[in-house]
Amino acid sequence: MRTGTNESGSVIVLTAMMATVLFGVAGMAIEVAGFYSLKRKMQTAADAGAKSGAIELGNGTANWVAEARRGTSQNGYTHGVDGVTVTVNSPPTTRASAGFRTDRYVEVIIQQPQNLHLMRILNNRQTATVAAWAVGGPGPSPGAQIVVLDSAAPDAFLMSGGSTVNIPGGVEVNSSNATKALDLTGASSLTAGYIHVTGGDSCGGNCFPDAVNGSPIVPDPLAGVPAPTGYTTTCDPAHTNRTINGGIPASLTPGTYCGGIKVQGNGTANLAAGTYVLLGGGLTVSPGNITGTGVTFYSTYDGSHAYGPLNIQGGATTATLSAPTSGSLAGVLWFADRTAPSGTVNFLSGGGALSLTGALYMKTQKLKWQGGTTGAAVYTQLVVNRMEFSGGLTTLGGGSGGVGASGPPTLVE
Image 1 (cartoon, helix red, strand yellow):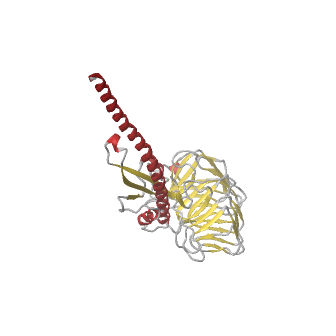
Image 2 (cartoon, one colour; image 1 turned 180 degrees about the horizontal axis):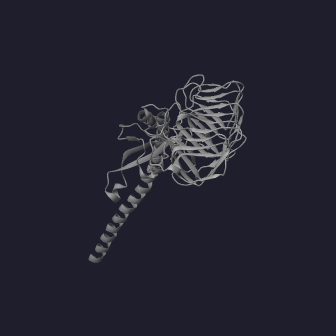
Image 3 (cartoon, rainbow, N blue to C red; image 1 turned 90 degrees about the vertical axis):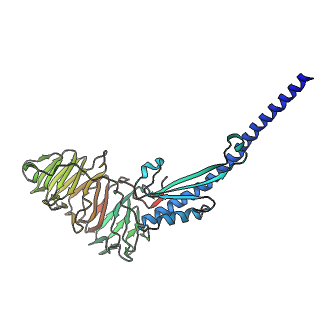
């Protein structure tokens, strides 16, 4: 009898232990399923908050944190209610969002503790925190080909003199001017993949497709591209006021050119791949010929060298230039110093054959394209403070894609 009693007791103890394990496992299955459903709901709220905050940030206002939290609240998660914490960051901070760590993006993290019930049998924990996160900001809009950054000017993007522009990509005009942010005059016409204007337009039926007014401001798509550093500011005579004036073609190598580079008198300059720092003077081709593959021009200045623009003019002028395809300046053909004088006007004109592959970046300056061009680059992206086309037919590229993210704010991660 004693032996039987011992065996029965062992069975009872073993059964009790197994029941505990089974209840714990069942509880885990039930609660994990509940947490999964909760996580999906929380993720929807985080996505909404990140997109709302990114739109507000893109509009240039200071309310992006409040707007992000409003987005999560509308989806059931209010900061400070029922233990909910909604953290909003710009730039994003989490490791997973490393690709979007710039102040153009908004990160939303939602956290809420949940009471454990059956699962506590296994781990003796009373609560667990459920979390979700999302990042919103400018998406990689394929084809934001002309981006005009000025936020208020009338005629920020002006077309006059019967000019015709055809591009496969899109147009983004940030000016909030109510009627003439995008202004077409003199029977000019614009055909693009899409046309977004923060303010208003005066297309007069000559924009194809119609411009979408009231579009959100698009952040500078090249803001994250680092300006060249570490270049010498002491120039030898061979790199000072470098002028090619007819005669034998000149072969140039990367380096610092004090006073810039000038090609005139139908001269020819052939450039080796690399970065050409134009310390004052800029680049002038009028008339002449210039070629280069894998090149970037960085136009800058100092106290001894006045800033110089991009100036390619003349009916007999040809320019066949392409940006590098790798490195920190990949895709950037012309980079104007971000602190360059705002009154500077850059010129491309004269009906010459221009094949410019890459981005022309003029954050503080105007680009004036006159007389059209007979050439067509694989892809030309214009990121400028203000833009003007005057006369002639200009066709920019047949490729797709640009440099950087320049689409309207959206959910990116």
